[in-house]
Length: 198
Image (tube, rainbow, N blue to C red; front, top):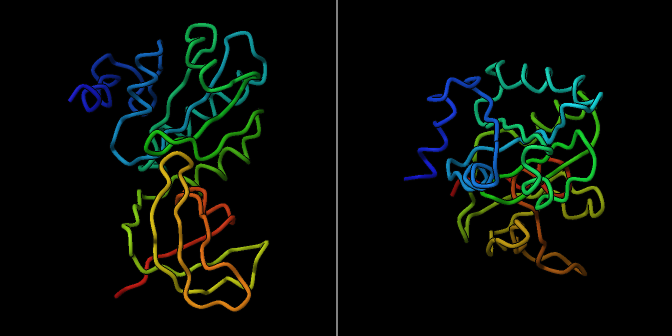
């Protein structure tokens, strides 16, 4: 109940409707553990950082645009909330980190608006959770293209790494298990899977 309440607390405080400012470690942890299935995009910033001043307004504009209904946007001032920045390994600003279900799915450092926008599009789709034994189809494998268009089933999810285990059908001379990142990472081309109708 507390986590759900935090998800809307920013609105009650009169903050920007689509942007949470995470002032302390408790707020950061609550945002990270908010179980609404949405992507959490965090801008680690500093008031003295020149590149942060350039990209910050664009990040805010993306939050306000309404184009990313499955993304929660948040900012962490690393000087104000150094605990969260240290826990996330932030060493330079701006750093953008992306989380789903409390698991980091991607990050980058720098004021690269094109990369930020691309990741928001790639990672910010509707939440999808594949149940064990769900039928899937692989595609987008660049390092092992011979495995594209293979049918398989979800064998499980390793919650520590955020990777799905996919058991493929019979494939000659290739291991029968693949480890795929959760769907947000899968869209980046490491391994893509899509659900199949039964």
